[in-house]
Image (cartoon, rainbow, N blue to C red; front, side, top):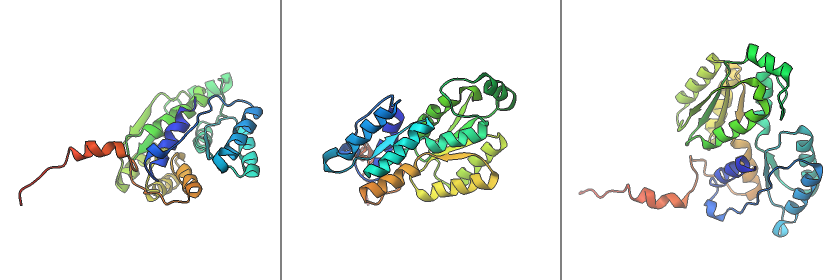
Length: 240
């Protein structure tokens, strides 16, 4: 439906400015090579310069076509689900699919019924959770029954705790941190304990930083002017 790509795009753009300036066009249910070519052709000629394409393709053939053709047309593209899908393939020992393979399903019941996913974020966790749920649809045979959502993670100690919990439960870690250092530390901890992981946010933010040629703010929530009035209500006057 394009909802995950839209959600992540808006969240990432907030790291560079007000989302009121963001202009998006959604192309849902991209399923053919012709549709890929059509989309990139439109992006390549958007208002005199290429538009950025943020997408969630599970089909490896279409994903490769998107990337190969985008290079030819000088269109920046990011598949925000690819890293997550690859991590799940490794952890579940299954190939991504839109349908359940009975052999894979039986293997999953035997080996991975207790496997879960830890979704970590420095905000509410909506982006990490939405992307994880979308990716899990390609692995219905994996029988993942629960997501552990860890919102408002702001310290390195919390990251260590979540990763260790995931390690103890043989689970995957997905995360979305605005601060590049927090994301880097999470990757280091996951690799140290050999926990499969996916950084959902930083690959998109890095690509957007190159596209906009503008530095990110790197703070949870980014810049949201709509929250200013709410924030102002918490101000108070104290006597000196």
